[in-house]
Length: 487
Ligand code: GLN
Image: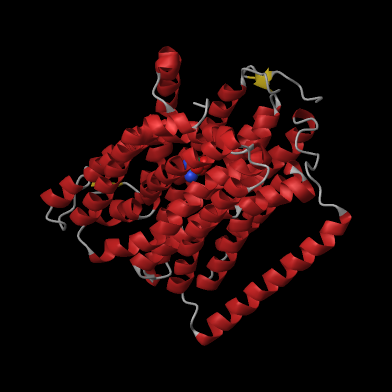
């Protein structure tokens, strides 16, 4: 490949382009998410839509699930029709338009159209931008893992900055202006992608790996066309007759979040292209997948349950200064950026003596569980009503990030290694399905939060994560063995 091999902190220059494209994409996504929840349930006179809080949380989760589910479509389009580069560009355009739509003063219907754009756009962009990172390095290049770590930094630097800017403006001034700034962020990302990509990315991502043959094209397009039409007709009838409410839609997404990965596993396992060793690896991947789902279910509630907790249950006034509740969304990425280098050093130091992947996943579940268990204390001490110190949330976010650093960086690489060769191109979306499934389940869980006590809610989910962690820990030798030489 004619990709320049150096020039950005000792890495291929193309990493610069991908770094800032993803930085701005995540800036727009997490900036929007930081205020969207409040926009939905704040009263009309506060500039919100006045939705019920449980419903707003549920919509956040359904939306988050779809954003990661659509990665399957994005991966497929890149692989078979457009190539990764062009797919990323179109994705960015969709995302930008989605945010700009929300910048217009409008109600729930504009919100749903905007969500559609961002779901499609992120599905096109996110898995593909990560997969070009891999293309920057030859298979033997030892800088590859470091490249992915730098890339994970860009994700979290964008996610850190966004709530501080979009959140402050959105909450203190006007939600729509906030969404507009998120759109502007994506616009900057697109400009950087286009202008520097030409020079720095060389030919990476321009080719279509497995192009649709002309005769397949017709068949596939007809099938997709019919399916899309059926969905639109069913949706229209559903809405018209009042059968398709947000709740029913949520149930459908929850079901899909569980069914899609299940089918994927069955398909991979039964495929003729999957060898005997690979079959064993597919089985080994199942408990890891389930752990990741449990982990992200808790982690993602930082943007829903804990966001509303920050807003309504903590003391945000320090003297005359009022902390915008959206700022709490910066805590997770802040801890990721500051602690990731520590973990990298630790793994280097431990070398071969570091825990196996299943063990890391088990520990990640312990920390996720703890992050919820600590929230039982303020619930208990405050009697569930008095405002509590925001530092409880800081502690909770800190704990979940320790888990994230044990699970997320290894998760992607182990997915690539455990997936059968014939499915290699789709593994990026397979990993993102853990987040999709998690949030599909959250769409139901967040409703439970409205009817049980905080103490019970955090206690139950926190314990569940820890119990699952213990099971994984006990099974870890068996899982490792089934991984057949992969670690
Ligand atoms: N916060 C990270 C990101 O946005 C991880 C998300 C995930 O894998 N669920 O990329």
